[in-house]
Length: 498
Ligand code: GLU
Image 1 (cartoon, rainbow, N blue to C red):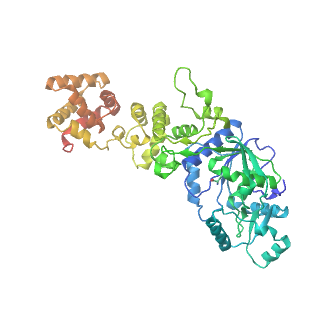
Image 2: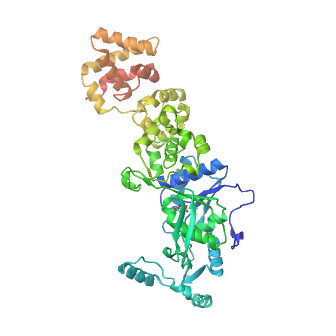
Image 3: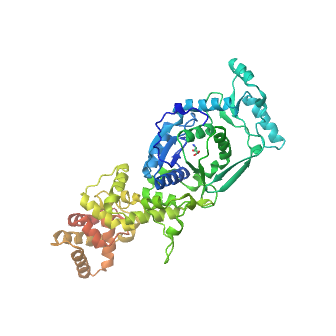
């Protein structure tokens, strides 16, 4: 190591776990699906290895970074159940470290001061484009001697620090996903390390931090693949050995173009707002570009797709990462969501539902026991947690709305409404209120009135639940309780006209 690590701001000692992985978001936007998938793969990898998962906020773009975005990113990670062992570290608080590294690189002759102004660079870029060549910095300030550069800086001239990319040869590295990579050095320009205001570029800060934080594996999106040769050169110039790079294939929308807002929500928290169970989203994300291979195979049917977090941790490996891009499939996510909602113990679903209620400023009037029974009854039919704060409200209190179409379909006949009200009286007087007795009563009542039991069942369902579809009517009655059932049926005559 050529540079002095004494400036490191965080504690690090020899007992640091062997495998060290980081998630390094730039807080210039929300935690999006791609970022969350990168974080998840890094987290699973760290947990699998019993290593450390480090969170680092890359906030050196002061204009575009914001504290709100940081909060949102942390919230997204927490929602998905990812915990970190160290950090969050903020690059904005570590600027000295990067300046120091740049000074070391200047000292060792791997970097130089460049005095070209923005206008000059732009003019050259424009003429290169006009001539049909790739605009690339031509390295003209390489020839300025160190003494000369020092004199010009002293006189107040502004300069950036550029890395001196070898003119010949190639830069190579082994990517854990994409295999051996090779980039001709002639294709890489002398990239900027430090801007004239002393702020580091991504290339410098990322390498300095990954070294300082002793990262062993760099797991990130394949959009960074072309940045990697520059960073490899920096590692080499700093006399450091390379971490393992693993670049993740991109996530595409159903039309096979890169996932973007055009395809719907890209922010992770938008999925929470849609009523997705976090574990379902995590399971879905884990299989977006990774496969457990043989472990998912079943001799007698399709591959397994539902995996608990501990199974994911146990099975995760870089070798299972796909080489081809992954496609984000909304129907698949919806499928995961229903599967998770269905499989959960009601008590486990309750806090998630309560969160929905809090957001909707809804307060239930029922006891915990009643709520759990209602959840158990409803969960096989739920498609989203949102259902519990919308279509299912009739089960949790007396404030709910009646679906217009259901009203029209089953309650437009005033005779049916009157009969339902009378049925309500009968239920009020029923001695033992069970699924069997409620059904018996309704059928006997229908026979007595000469009406089809089905007409009363359909009407009662709408009156009791507000919906045309619901679990078995008599199970619903039991769930609501005798008084509530009687009251709602008696009120059938007061419902708005269909
Ligand atoms: N801050 C970079 C990003 O959000 C991190 C890239 C990396 O992991 O090296 O894309």
